[in-house]
Length: 202
Image (cartoon, rainbow, N blue to C red; front, side, top):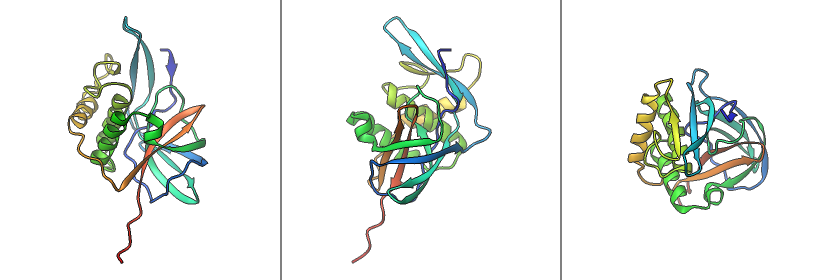
């Protein structure tokens, strides 16, 4: 294995309302499921099919902290695979600016709008796999292509089948949600969302 990840974030974010911000903030990162399965994913490297492997927990992670003076408690996804997950200082940026790719942004926003917030372990783990697929690949399947879940030694079919079903049924974007990434150069970048405050009746 080329790189081992201590813990890979997953899950569907459910937050208190927060305003947009780019300020750096300290976030505490924990585990949402103590008994989440561990597994291996891979990214193909080069035209001849060499691969980089990443191993760790597929379980979602909790994040908590204060952004622009507002308390945030969420379950978050890992949006990339190349760093270890840990607490620390993060910069909060919009998902659209982080990706700089409207197709990937729209697909991930649809995915979270449709399947996020379920609180179901299988759904949350499948969501993480689907997020990686949309981030790194063409969104067709988590079992093949540039991004792939490796189940040569373990059977993850429950999660991979659920992830592929989600990818086939992305739904529509919930316009009441705002999508963010907490990023840091030496830590995994974490994807979460906030719900915009309700507009009071006149």
